[in-house]
Length: 194
Image (cartoon, rainbow, N blue to C red; front, side):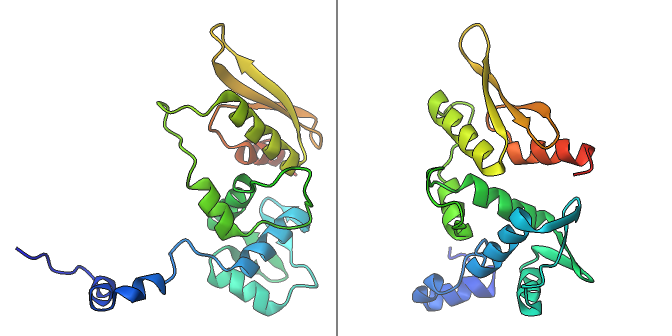
């Protein structure tokens, strides 16, 4: 018994298999759009949580492209980063496989970062090597401009937590293996109104 196609997309792919490679992935985001978003987040004039003043050097077309990609909402001269925008920034930070000694002025391409993060396993059965995980935590701390204070282990040598200090708030915090340093940092800073 032959299954019937469920959508127009399936029908088109069956008729023209080469079309599959020309239709962009749903996760694809234009490099210019993701780069503009990252620049706003990294160097922008923050008004309050996830709301930034639109840079005077940024055109309305740039803003509209980010809105179309659902990364921001425009509120007058202000830009609010959406949940999808936050996720794009997280992927760009976590998927940056460059050394911390390389030029930090170059912003990693979102789509490259996304492909870098797709290979990371989060299964509890397949634990990442401790030194590799620690290296990633150090890299995240450096990118976020916070201090990595080390790891906390139980009596058997299993890593329980990674410790960090935020110089802006002078607060220390911990993250479980596989947890989000950026999310924890944002929560800490939100409590301080930063």
